[in-house]
Image (cartoon, rainbow over all chains, first blue to last red; front, side):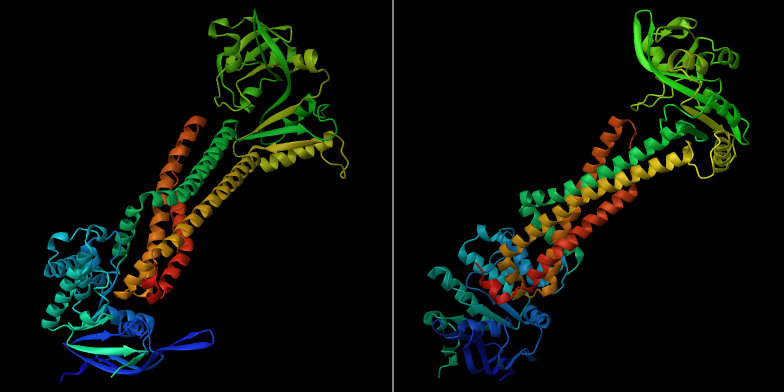
Length: 224
Length: 395
């Protein structure tokens, strides 16, 4: 088996609220290998969101080590984390999180902007990514002019436009009707079949069933 | 990110909220426009004062009495004659003036009647347009002859054909022998509104006594005004029998001093006006800061998204700073255009024309940039420091 893309070793994330300490993640170890489609499943309060933040390099673990695509990220500064996010991770959020009053094309091109890629190249790659998701005729539409399913597909295009090592999806079907949700899930399976590593975070067992492997979280720990 | 990318982002953002951008810029526009306009007006005034003072003759010294009852006057015609012998003095004209009603037939006008000598024309730099000026014999004999200023002649309806006509000055008949070339200028004291008559007749009919109000002295070209002033002061102190401990009972005004004083006053005025106007620039800057802070809050989620997809803190900082700078610079440029229009308009109304000063424009641009940076940097830092997790969750 290939080297793991994600390797968490004894990761804890403890929040301090006044005098009370809340361990949102408690000694979690797990590996995700290249080409895997993993679902992290758990009810609310199980530490899913914290897991998403840590895996997405938006937050640092309090203890333990996290290696992403060979880089130890637990000790990196803010700018270095931003760089890791920019090069290695594509995010898909529950609420799409597209930039308002910005066309689909510009939304998809935004991650490339922060990689310092020139305008013409950005447009070419963003157009190609949107084309692959069947949105070639929606390039100039702003988020408010698109349906929920279309917005989520724009978000997926934004996630894959940088060719990241990892796609991190946080409840990607949560705001969609079942039809659009099924479409998005089919999209993830397609991307996975094409070799992409996907980590999906959800509370929905049905959605999780689409993944190749499920990791169950309960009270901040990996359930057996 | 290149500056062009940042500008593109800022402009597209400002386009989506045009009214807000326009209102925010309005503060800077008003500030910059008033600075440019008021400095322009200040410069116009200075230039105007300078050119008027130059028209009075730059080699002119004016001597007037000071101290108790200046109107009694300590200066006399004899003083005037003595001054004429000082080295470097080209001409001396004693002046006694009085306000009188001047009539010709049924037309009358109130004007200044100046009693003086033949040297007045050269000392005060007047040219004769028609007829002749006062002659020395006419002055010595105290003849009742008058030379009219252009405005006075106009008021009385006297033209070139009317030389030799009789006018009444304060009821006393005089014969018009000449009309002066107009000097122009429309200040509140029109130099062309006067009647010039022999000094003796004014002393005899109107003011009494033998003192004079002022003595005008023109210096020869190349003579040092300071030296001549010192010589005249020494001479007059001697003639007035002043003890070394006594103060002068007269004043010698130097035209260059007057010019310098007037210019400095006008400069101070311009600075003051500019200072007041820059307060509104600061207020405009605060407006920008206010709007940028609101904008950071409104766009918290956008900032979170940008950070999630790879923006560093400094990318966000640059984006918001360039947005503030675009607002202030755009406002500054519009303000300069408005300010130049206003100062051109005022210049035209006041009749001193319009000069475009590159310094003012440069300073205005610089100031609006500074306003943008100073008032934009804080909101931009707020934006850059946002935690991406909280920003993404922000509703």
